[in-house]
Length: 618
Image 1 (spheres, helix red, strand yellow):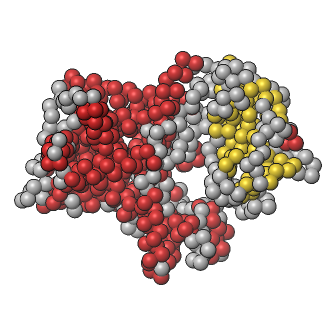
Image 2 (cartoon, rainbow, N blue to C red):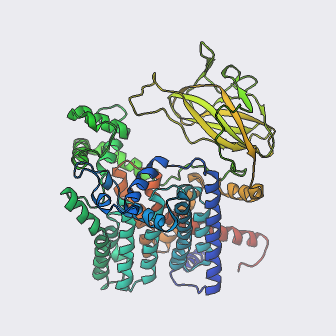
Image 3 (cartoon, rainbow, N blue to C red):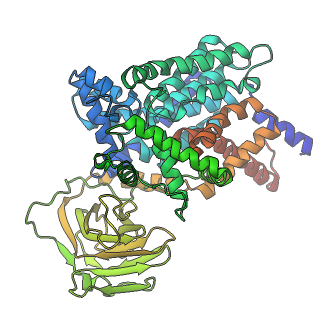
């Protein structure tokens, strides 16, 4: 095959000209992707049923939803002691409204809300399939894109959290699917619906506030000449009109221009404080530190511990003012910070993948006075254990705790093996005081060295004025299933490249009862194996390849649709402190590029194999 022929084939394979996909086949593909996504999220739900993420944040949304559910519309609209207390507008009202609607049908329970979360997130995988099919006309690329989203541990992990972040993505995906369907000859009703969907997303998370006007600026790449101005204006106007009711509410109640919600100021200040490691600018780097800084600066003890009550609007204005003062004084430093954040947004978050063993079925609540099935004293934590990775390891003077320290990421403590019963639910309890650094505690099968349970990354407590010397010991509680293991070890690891120092008390293991859901083990192993591939080092090259193929084929419209959301978040969110959950929507679009890269790689390898075998390339 000549170079010109290869280029022509690439243009053909990435062309917008649709290859007809029969409805029956499309329905089957959508059903498969939806069911895979639903199953993966159900497994994550099962794994986390006793330790959900972002529980503290979920409580705030639930409190606001209960106001509406109980009929207290006035307090839902303007909060308590208005206009002094501004907690009610620290986030948009969409998610509490959704919670209240679910409560009105199913009662006040987290279970139907989580079920709705995983269904909507599974539908997001279907929307990705449909968007990819609309752009490339290839069932293969579309199916790969849908399955990538369905299997992704990053999406599945966040989907079960009762916060609005995962639900902000489906409306955006639907908006871009509508834009893709309009083609070069836009239908104003479809464009208006797309703008409205972006506005709906803003009711859930304010991060997409300027997305509709931003996409409108790309009209020259999306629509043909002579048909650009009207759809661009309609798109921007529809998005802004959906947001306007919230802006009016904020203006009437708080006498201030607040488009959606408060929080830009506190994230701006914290973002600067986190990157200012030398402390040159004097800005705090955490929520509690911000309140302490304000309490001292204004002589207001009542500010301590509360970010938005009282005087939330005025405090936000002050935070923005302090943050912008640093930006004006050090613009090049801040641009470097933004560039670093923007680049980091392409990384996939390291989250828990589906466990190999079924989740704990018994409630991890041992009765008061219940004796543990086994214990490991601090002095015996390293007996027969692997201590090669430790730089410091010794018991305290009264032998009540084991002190350990390490300079680099890796193993700190490995306990001796303890006997457990097969196929039994257990609860690990470990008193841990972290003075410095980040720690992960694991339970491992002593024979196979497989991880049976792992905690999230644990840090020192950074509120209530705790210092390194006054850190309290906290009971780490982690349920796990023994599975086929007859002996387990407790492993403590340094989870970062920074030095760590901590103390561990007596380890206790409580038997909770026989395990269940053994039938899910083969499915879990299959999903777990696939999820291990969702690393930046594996996915990013295929994203870059997919983008390269589109550039080479001069598919500027497809590039604009797939990169507008990532570029938008890189430009706007990089100015503020960010987390992976804030930028979830952009990764759905990047996975479509990865799917194109994977499909083209597979086709290239297939042609190469057929050529080596002397066969004909279909």
